Structures are given as structure tokens and as C-alpha cells.
Image (cartoon, rainbow, N blue to C red):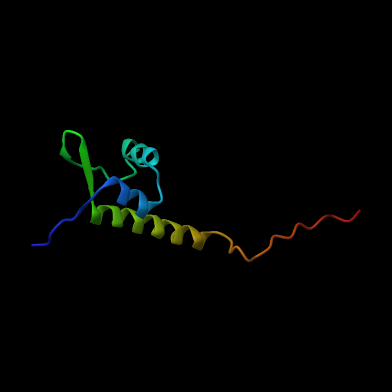
Length: 82
């Protein structure tokens, strides 16, 4: 049986680069993992769920990159000569 590790808010912030308000906005919007209540005033997040969220963000970035013009390709605007 695999053990589940819980991490507290400061660790979630460190791993994601998000601040508390962005984390809770993501939870409210359904785009960020929900915390696990530990007591009346304490919550933590499942470490694997946070890592999966990070991995999905990286995957989204990589998938978008394929459909966009590479950053090193300059767009040249040709002006019509009169």
C-alpha cells in the first residue's frame, strides 16, 4: 500500500509559485486541487495531486508550443511599394 503525503500551504506555494489568493481562486474555479481538512482551522494538499497539476500545466504548455510559431521566427511585415 502506497503512503499518501500531505503538504501544507507554504509548500504548495513554493512548488507552484502561486500565492494564497491564486490557490484559493483556483480551488473555487475548479482548476486547482482541493485541500484535505485536517482540523477546524488546518488543511493540507495531497502531494501527488499537486504534482499532477504541475505536470498538466507543463503538458499544456508543450502542446500549445507545437501549434504556435517558434519564438525565434521573426514576422516580417511587407509593405506595398507605391
